[in-house]
Image (cartoon, rainbow, N blue to C red; front, top):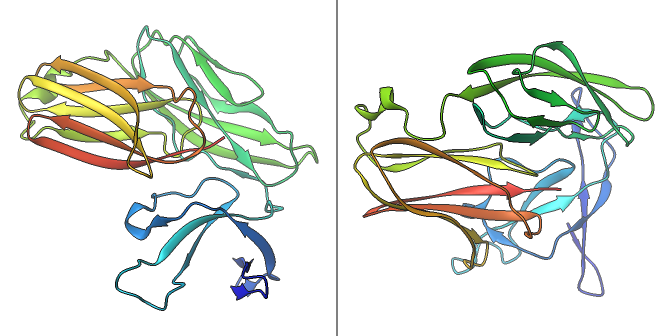
Amino acid sequence: MKLNSDSTWTVKYRKWKDNVWAPAVDISIETERVSRLAAPNHCPPTYACVFWDKYGGSASIATWVKFAKIPVDLELTIATISLGNGVKDAAYSSLIQAAGGTAPYVFSLMSGTLPEGLSMNDSGYITGIPVTVGTFAFTVKVTDNNSDTLSKAFTLVIDATSGVFKNDADAITASSLISHLPNPFTYEMTIKYQLAQEGNVSLRIYNIKGALVKTVLNVRNSVGIHTVRWQPKGLTPGLYFVKFQSGRNSSVQKIMLIR
């Protein structure tokens, strides 16, 4: 980083590849900052995590973590990490995303089989109503505007029900948030939680300033593992937190909404 005469910062980014540092390129940092404890597990596609300490290690001001937009890598990549679970006889939608290369991208099923009732269009959207329970493995190919191609293997799990999984109920010893997939996500996320005893449960979404932006769930549930599907309508891309609360049990996990 370099401090300019007008008090702005110039930030350069280098990529390490094949044991060689690539030439430095300028990046523009975003205006929001978050503490290092709030950094998500994964950066969104075409972003880098930039760490620095403007104040030389001041005890009162934490090291900054920012997402920095970088020039799109010339290498084509499939940025989606994993797909969220589906539920038999319930509408399903998920998006496979690409980055790098030259847009637009065209997606196709290279091998394997999607769950019966689901299909994927050439934009990478997997949609439909699955009618079969199980774990399905398949490979997706993306082709960019320069006819470069890349493939990636995925698995998609279709559960029998969105309610309680009876076989797991006896093994649950604590109420907690289990998972939220995919993460980062674009269109929809599946949130899974477990209850060790019957009681009220809430799932709420907060922004990085701690403001409540959405109550996903506020109901009374029985013992067991439960799932809920959430679509972030009206929210801007960025870092959010999902908070699970049931009685005295609570947990918070980070989620990243991208476009």
